[in-house]
Image 1 (tube, one colour):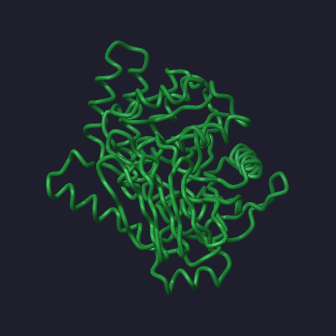
Image 2 (image 1 turned 90 degrees about the vertical axis):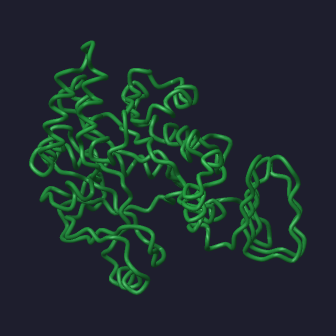
Image 3 (image 1 turned 180 degrees about the horizontal axis):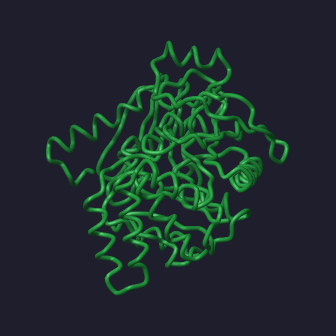
Length: 358
């Protein structure tokens, strides 16, 4: 069994800590380990590091290699440009196929938080068994605990069986991020699950589905595979990627395939999508206030607030529901519940040509 960790993206909602040169997954947001180090730590009791493949961009490869010395450097694949998750997954699949003709492949984002790593590994192992047994595209459906409008949903259908004591469902439909009213309806119905972005399948099965639904990408992957190990491998990958259309694996394959199954799960998942989620995962005092390790804070008559400030003391007096993030060159102050809007700040900085702050 192999794991692919997708280490692309910028994590703009974690500005001002997350920057182009050092995005979210390379930061120590929740603990003293970076998010991608935690991702590797979680999966390596199940999958040895020699079988963990990471796809990243050129500008982040050196830092990633520094942070993960246990991962063989030949397992770190560098995309010449971002082309969304379908290309990333296909690129890793052909590399895995070169080493193991038809292995089970576990696809993981690099930037999630997991509260119960032991149960998480049990779910991944069950999904791998289902993928092997049923030649299916298996995804992990997360049981929602609130009507969240920031995630895509999957509608669970009939039971396809049980694997290692866990129920396996057919997926009836994929739904885009809903409005609040529809999200409440999904929660009430009880058969809708958050789309985790975690997938398990055999490399042969995902390549067959890419061939059927994304023929241009499949042709490019065949070209990449033919050039692997040759002197012109890097230029071949660049040439192929240059002509690929960016498309997600969800839209390109999962929403069209008839082979999709789901294992419902609940292992304390968080997408770590904003400063609000960091506050939710952090240990707080009796007033609901939290600060990251190393931050210097004084909370006086303050409730439900969060501070990141390792370089200077931050004192909050008479405040409620406030997020403060202080870095060398930027200070973010926002109301709790509004940290998703940090992306608008990043957009404004880009429009204003202030690249030194990005």
